[in-house]
Image 1 (tube, rainbow, N blue to C red):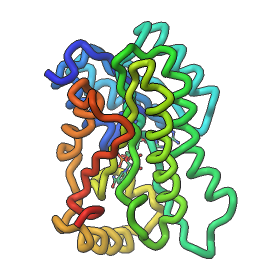
Image 2: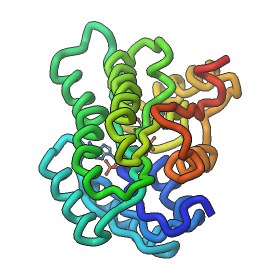
Image 3: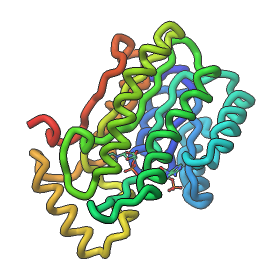
Image 4: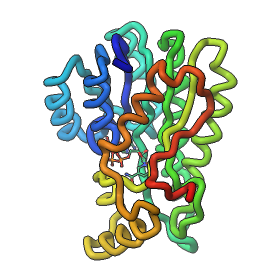
Length: 251
Ligand SMILES: NC(=O)c1ccc[n+]([C@@H]2O[C@H](COP(=O)([O-])OP(=O)(O)OC[C@H]3O[C@@H](n4cnc5c(N)ncnc54)[C@H](OP(=O)(O)O)[C@@H]3O)[C@@H](O)[C@H]2O)c1
């Protein structure tokens, strides 16, 4: 199996893509998985569900709190000594219409989607085994020009760039960095946009109409790519991006 004997961290592992990937990682032989989330209730529910599949540790972590990152690295070191892969998946998507963008809107989204993963990787590399893999979650939107997503798309473009630089910096330690770029997936993230239900449905319909496959993806349709990037199967890939987006960014 792809993750036989591996120990990994999945940030934002309580819902959506992260939670589904944690389940798949156990099915692919992972020895232990640590997940993070912000919300205590969702963290406990995810931990209980994943505990049926294997050794899981649930840790509260906020991407915009550097002290949380130091604490997270300490917990992982104490519990596992070293880890094999990091799926830096936690992220937010806050649409910001042009004309309403201020410095706070930029900084808050960049902090969660870019600065947080960067500081996370920096804190975790010292406890990563050789042949380790880091997967950063971007978005197909950094390759597209979709109105209202200037800040979000740029935060993911920054992550895409980071994967290239970190790959060069970490290759001699035997650690690879790649990115996973989802298209639109049915997850709780869309309910966090702050839109009214009818407005959200309309927006989702518009997005689905732009995707060549004509629909949102289901989280089971991205986990194979996530696990592949986290595993030794992708050992000859560095600074690469794998798009799982129904063809949106390519056709
Ligand atoms: N779904 C899509 O259509 C889509 C498309 C392109 C890219 N993506 C990217 O895929 C990743 C996963 O998204 P998803 O759709 O699975 O979203 P989701 O269901 O909303 O899950 C997000 C996860 O990240 C955690 N999280 C959110 N804000 C955080 C913060 N400030 N600090 C630490 N953890 C935080 C959440 O925990 P709490 O619930 O406790 O806050 C949750 O566990 C994100 O990076 C997203 O940008 C998603």
